[in-house]
Length: 422
Image (cartoon, rainbow, N blue to C red):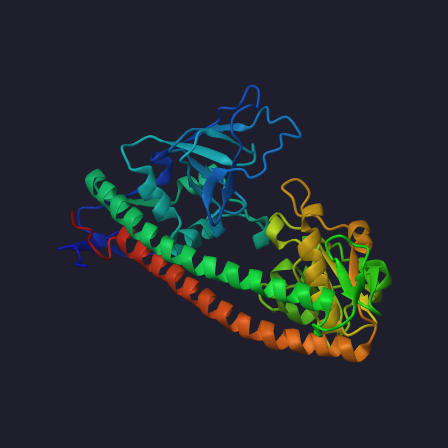
């Protein structure tokens, strides 16, 4: 793609040079805050996501009145003031209502709202939103209306805005279709992996083994000598550490707290870590403990788990659970994967999203007490799942590359680095 013929200094250090005929304007002259509220709360409830923008809320159960929620119209800008710097904002395609804690803005000038949606989501603007947010630590940062009003918006002429939106919509649709294909493959591979795990931990590895009725409908028959036991008799589960931002310290001065973000693809990862100063010994993890996400805003994340495979100076957070068993840890991990997969409808719903100790302890699972058989099952599943995970990793890598490509294209176009031609 070609560049514009001439460029000029924007007068804004973080924007740098822009096309000569583009302008910058403070957002307070572009948007006006709206304070309209719902009289009865019957409108469609919208959610604000840093990933999906403004979308209809999933599982809107209306368990409480939404009277007084802020009214949103199509093309309004909605900002979650706590997550603006992480992309928690967007221009709405829907009419509805949002939490009173959010800010709603209406355009006061002839601009394409979709162009501004693309603009405000690029890293350059997220960094600027961070600079205009106030608070002692990131978890308490807020970008209020006066702060947002000081952020300059980069504006091409309206005709170019429309052309940019048309171009980006077309490009993003193609890339999103490619991402969807990769995600479909991941889903199929994960489904295949779950079937293999379920089969191994309920039927064993010997296809010729004598079977008996387990007494549990979804498990069916199990090998003779196996038992069906509730998880409370296989190990002990505990809820995690409750802490506040005031308890958080730097890495060198505290204990790592394992959270949902520390579990990825069945493994512990050490990114976006949190450390606290004081942890009771009983809430410290040990090698072979299994850490489980017991509560999350996303139902799909509840129940994901990972093994503590090495000695680790760490605890686990309040929305996590630890399961400690005397049996082969990898075998028990696969047991839990199968059990949680089947019983997920009990705790991962739009209204609950919580795996309680009581629900967890009462889950029934088939189990062999033969240590050699536990080891064989675990090793076999490690081998098969390892191969499937390799393919899943390749698909995830492709998705990352496609997401990166999307961001590059959007960034170059909305900042005028390249020219969209009609």
